[in-house]
Each structure stands twice: as C-alpha cells, then as structure tokens.
Length: 186
Image (cartoon, rainbow, N blue to C red; front, side):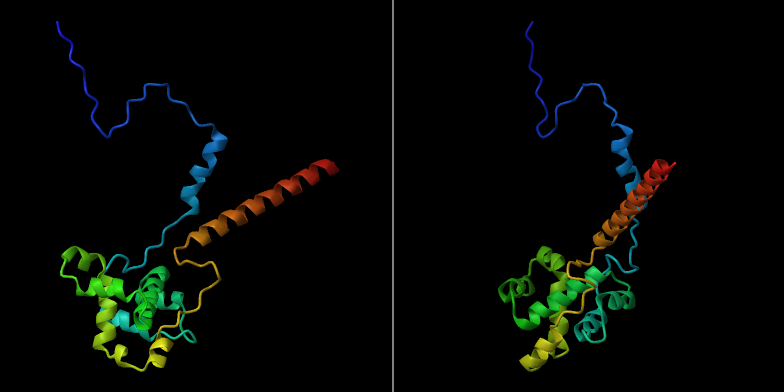
C-alpha cells in the first residue's frame, strides 16, 4: 500500500499542539486596564467625504484666530484630519510635491482618484475659488499652519492616553510611598 504525503496548505502556520500556558495575573493587568484607559471619541463626520465649504473654511483659517481643535469642533471632524487637510493646502499653495499631486489630479485611474480624493478636492477648491491666482505673498499667508497645543502634538490623541496612564502611575507611586512611610512610622 502506497502512502501519500499530505501537503501543508501554503501560507498557514503549523498547528501548535503544545499545552496552553496561562499568563500570570501581574502581566495581564496592563492589558485588562487598557480598555478602561482608551476611549475613542469619534467625530460625527469621521470617514465622510469633505465638502467644498469645509475645505474653503480650512483654507481661510488664520493662525491668529483658529486652532486645529476649534476648527475640528466647528466642522465635526477630528483635529488630526483638519491638520492633514491644512497641510495639503500648504503644500499645494507653496508648490511643494507638485509632481506627485499634479499626477494624482491629472490621473484618470479611478483607484488613484478614490485614494487621493482629498488632495484632488483641495486643489479643485483652491483653483475654483481663485486662491491659486492670488499673489504669492497672499498664498503663503494662507499656507501658514495653525498653532499646535505643544511641540510633539500629532492630532491622533495618543498623547492624551499616555499622559493619563503616566499620571495614574505617578499617583499610585505616591500612594505606595505614603503607605510605606506610614507603616515605618508605626
């Protein structure tokens, strides 16, 4: 009797028949608390296409009066999304990466047009509303970024979660130190 070799399906990991090891409780605590630390707050228009009016509002945003957070609240978007659009406005007005976005705008490929819809829309609004016809000094004024809350801010809220975790850890250490001092004085 001839035995045939069974072939493993390609791309799958081999089956692991080793006994399941439980992770000790002290190593699981971080992951169990993570769900409580991070709460996503989705803006109402997250994932929706940008309107021409929203883009124009971002273009006209001035660093003296607007911030990414105030603009995001007004438009129902995240501050990171507003920042990204303002960055594209700046790139296009200053003529940076013109070869890349120029190719996207000129492309007839529906995949490119779908993936780069935001850039194409920003360029369309800048062109239709006459922002590209303004003198260079005025274009550069419009291209200025808005103020950020602090230097390392990215607009994705990761810093807030890390600061909360750090604060809670500092509070816990302070409580432990207080308990040790109280125990040693008794």
